[in-house]
Length: 570
Image (tube, rainbow, N blue to C red; front, side, top):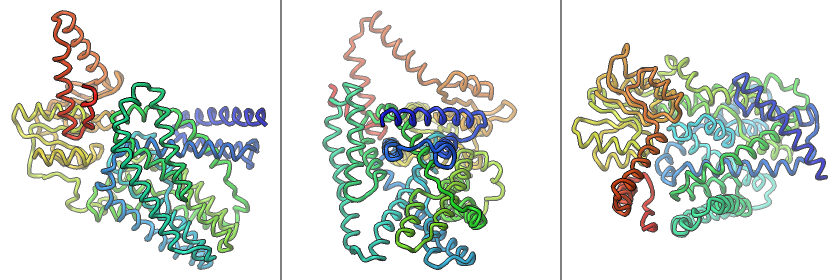
């Protein structure tokens, strides 16, 4: 048994590596390579994957770690900041897509009951796949990503409610009271998790972080433990892992925890997508090929349009709406589970389940290209999607005011530039999309604009060419190139400073016309070495520098850039 499992595992890794290399050479998303690996090792081709349950277990670990790391990147305030748009867009898209799909399916000759199941299934998008794509793209901190995470969680909640309520309604094996009790337990336990993290884990954090190994082990135990408890009370491990991660986002070492989990997360999530590909069963696909293609086009095209309409009405700009819309251009694993439930209850046929499976393959492949290359798609579609944008979107600045200084990105090192600008006079505009930063800017009465720095229309409305100095603390190379393009005309314009995290990117920004490129890692090392030199040459009291640093950290903590925990280290 052990030898056979080792052989299967080795073959999967070898084939997955070759498939990933092929995807890199073809400049295709790696997630497609993982699914293709599953098709190759599964029953459709080689049929070498026999220890299915073990690999499913590995896949579940990957899901848990993926949602856990996403939670670490969030903040409990996201429920307040994006709750409204998440509810409206999540529920609105599910309702409109379901009604549209129901009409199409009835016209194609499907029965009413089957049409209801399939149309609802086509309305759900995969949280796991989209979070993986957004994470690979490095867009987790962007506005559209935060909106997408919000409404995807709303959709998952709707799907879970349906999965519990349909058997109750159809076979009357329980009551709606049981469902209400289940959801009540889940909400109550989530509140307990946040309270425990806020008042207990934060106090224990100092002892955890002294040992990197213990910090990793304790974090893994917390994430998987909460996910396990959620499964035990009848909810999904995805919900439990995400809540566990959000709860740990209160800790000051959340970035260190996040970095430790990235390799193990990526390893296990590969197994999940391989298993997903291996479980694809098409059956007699020729009989339902045309409906599958038609319904796939509905998911790939109509779902993004529906989301763009909803977000456009709510006041978001067309790029944000388009990128958010692309995240609903595929169906979810919940879609297959829902239709499979219909098969078990005798409401849906096996052929119809196979059709939904084919729709899943087509839409997962198609949406991967839409999400990963959304910036390219926006440049192509930009002139044609203006109808989805209000005349005065909420991300739009005042057109009649120009600024001497424009700071793009107000958190972290951006706060130092804010202090400098305020101390040296001149009117300042801060551009950010983080509600925490915006809240602090409102308190300090600093002019700001909410928007995505990667949106060419938004940058154009900022009138960067009229500024004296433009500073971008955004580390995204392509975004900084766009900022330079919108700031300079034939090499003339304001002084432009930008941030880069590699020497090659810094040289590229200099070539594009940047006045100065900030490399935080190099500056940090230079600053630390200068302080060390002061200790050696001037014998300066170490406690004086330490006190100044603690004071600065507390000042930043009051601004919301970090949690005020430095008191414990005095």
